[in-house]
Image (cartoon, rainbow, N blue to C red):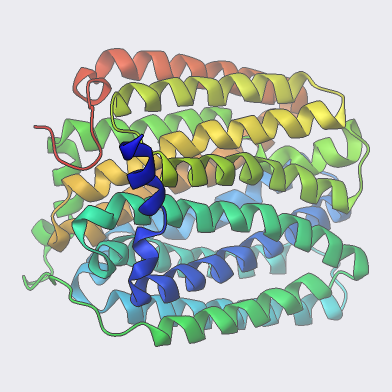
Length: 413
């Protein structure tokens, strides 16, 4: 059992570095803030319009800024201080959260002002994501990077558990309350970022021309492992995502209130954080690529079960299973991307990755909302889940090098 004892001893390896601890706390509070706002906005908009398409537009308005700013955000993360970029984004989140609070306090009669604020949040996320993702390798040594990636995912999944539940409960106290709490959390996240000492960073020094700005695209296109990992997640979640439709399931199918929406939104996080803690203790040491493909197929299967369920406990359970499967995919994919990418390119590669993730999540929400408006919420979710399983099978055939990846602590070229 010496290997098990060694794995347990290394469970908190990343937290031995104080800079990473501050970074992790800042990401956690920021993610909780976004989740609280997401639940409140979703319920508020659907309560106002009762149109599933508007739920899809919530995701679209946050994706468009990331797409339009793709070349700028990644280059900024490689050229300027990633820590300072994170802090500026948190301050912007504080301001936008305060605007949502004031807008709701004055009485919301149209979704248009909310969409405008969501565009602003999309801009902050577009800059925050590549800066924060590419900062982690600057805070821990290479041997602790996989552990840090697992705990990064844990912070996000903790937020997806706590944020929706807190957001749903706070919304029950009053529509303005979740926005006030989110604003306070943004302020705390900003403070933790400033606690991080200035880390070493290999910065890009070339003139900002098309060659340097597009370097992330070119690198991903050359590296089949990175291309396969990113595109697999994009198409699987784009086709199989159902987060945008949870207000429909909570209100109309399962007949739950705002607290029930919070439970549905939290369920994937429960499964994911349990899996993340397991992976931090028992990392994937063999067949990492194959594990990712199997996990994506299970993600799609769980979506089918969720779409067909009319029982709250089965719906929540299938979402928790979905979160656990997705966590395996995230863990393998993010570790591979960080490991295979040179530090001076990490910002630009992370920016492209974030746009792919945005395409999968936000465009996936728009896809789900549009399909639900045309054929109903249940068929939209079930068809999407089946499509995700198909994507896993196709990508396993198209990217054999990715399928054959064994280890996550070195580059197997």
